[in-house]
Length: 237
Length: 237
DNA sequence: GTTGCCACTGACAGGACCTGTCAGGAGCGA
DNA sequence: TCGCTCCTGACAGGTCCTGTCAGTGGCAAC
Image (tube, rainbow over all chains, first blue to last red; front, top):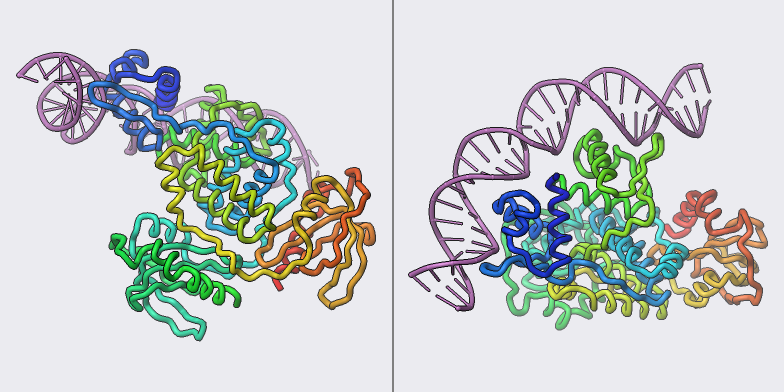
């Protein structure tokens, strides 16, 4: 039996019965316990919510399968349009994720809604106009998630460029323009940058801790509206 | 990437998009074509209903009822961004539906993903720029769904206006601009209209039957590319 | 009927990775 | 303290995975 099959078999077994010991799995699958432990490590690394407790055994936590979802037709429409827009307007990684998500939604939909879903007449063609961006947005998203500071040079609308070090906090979609907002270490304040004016983005090796006054929450709360308005100004070309 | 992951990825990719060539899969997964062929052999041996046709590619036949996996974090990100965009850019009814749909998705997420969902740093502010539209898009969507002809006057870019009767087929999102495409009874051909140039939209009492050559399918197939390109031209301002 | 596309197979060599064995650590309840 | 069980590291042997190369065959367009 191949390893891939075995990994799958382990999941299936845990799905059927609540609890399994490594020894039981090893016997059933005719491998050593050590191999089971390695398999478990890999499964967990792949995101399978398995929990092992010493003295007890392995349990599959809930939330591994996507249950059936009921949506109203209009909600489906909204999801499909949203996913299609992301597919055409966001970076490749996110675009693929949108398509995957949609495929999963479709898979758990009752049949009649599934049919409805395939007839939705809302599209987001990918030959639209967007300001060309040289930043790798997926990389930037990663930096935000994992709280890495970034460095780049920014070219303002007068054409002057400046080197910045920023704690990236959020990305905003303004149609043809994307912006990134964060705490600018140079200006000691929140700033919003158009992605199409950022060049030479480097994700630094430096992590930042959320400090009071410099977090996403602070940005949205204290400065949110005006900053968003400013960003809109930028985007309005 | 491990083999087990790759096998799984292949299934997911085929679920997402109808057709894949071995070469495309090989590129995406960074292995040789030979390896893909071997993977396919194993998948088929495991009972996955994949069909390969020479000169065409691989297709996943329907009815593959493997339990659907929970969303990955990146898929959640894509769904959330999509819903937020719809919320800020589409008509009220659809915007509300997007919010509702998101709430339903959130309800089935395990705790840690739910937490993740609430920290997503991708936004779509609603103070963006869009061409002002006087058409009620929800009404237009209704007309498309229920196959009602519509009448309106359209103002082309030279500023001349003409009265049209159209079988509406689809709506496209081009960022600041929305378009509607359909079969124009005046020009006896497919036409694409910018919603911001439509005035006095009236949904007629007249339903249309899908006639060969005048359907959404025909539009997408025969005329799709050029029409979409035209629409893009329009949208490019 | 020739060409091009593409699924598919076989052989082979090198090496990545999988596996079992052994040894030991750590958490938890009795 | 003991017993149960998860968990980790090191290591050696061998399985099987992978890329390369060469070739077959089906299908459609030209």
